[in-house]
Amino acid sequence: MNKNSPDCFLGGSSEGFFLLGQSFGGCRGVRLSLRTTHDDAVRKEQLARVLLDTGKLVGSRGRPVAIVIKRLKSRLAYMRNRGDYPWLMDHLANVDAQMRWTKQRWNLRSYDPSEWLSLGDDPTKLVEWVFDGKGGALAPLQSRAELTEFARLAKGHSPRTVLEIGTARGGTFLVLCRMAADDAKIISIDLPAGLGGGGYPEWKVPILKSFAKPRQTIDLLRVDSHLDETVMRVRNILGDRQLDMIFIDADHSYAGALSDFNRYSQLVRPGGLICLHDVVPNPNSDVIEVDKVWEEVSVGRDAETIRDPANLPGYGIGVLRV
Image (cartoon, rainbow, N blue to C red; front, side, top):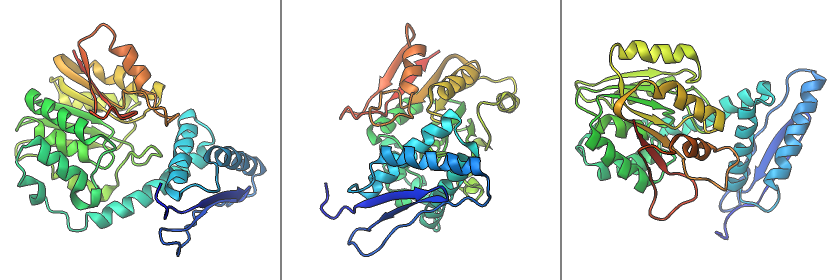
């Protein structure tokens, strides 16, 4: 571990919580706070329980700030997926999203599509730019090696109708657009905010739409993929067409990932591809359960898993041929 890694302390009360830590170099403190703005005794008691629960899990003193924040967010995401304290979890999700979006907006302040257009349709070069370009503002939470292999697969399939569920920063969406057919229709579904890292702000819409080739069309749905009305909106966009490819990388809970699979797999044509991210078990997260879904839906079917050569824990792209 880097000897300059800061120690941090997580603490709180029924009024809020805070995270204190030294920055690299030891000259700056970090403080995150949330305070209740009402006298609801029940909610204050619930907040105290959340603090106690997450504090025990994180381990507080003696850990680098980045590790503490990562474990804290993982725990809060798990609680949000479980439906605990929605009044608090939804607020935290929005705060978390605003912090991420502010950094992304700064890194994309001089965004110019010509930076990646010059790379042509080379999967390797495009994936490298997605991860390294613009300070990583578009970088997906994926393995470079896996995304590169998936890009080659998508290019060979040349889909004319594509659905991505879970767009987040937009890196995988860019890859899908550039690897799809020149006249493809590409649809994205994503919630505006989420503790798991999902969602994108309104100001990013023009950037995502700039990924389209001249004859492609892009439809961005900033809605809940688990709603029947969302499925109907996708059907309306497709008209009499079926999907050639789906990439599912949204709600990583068992129930959430299975819901996305069941709802949208029925829209895929025979010979099409249904792809799920994070199908490899992740021992470092109690939130990601996509591997359980993949184990169920891939049994006895034409399926393969794209794995990083380093056999990283987690990640993995499952590809199911209909």
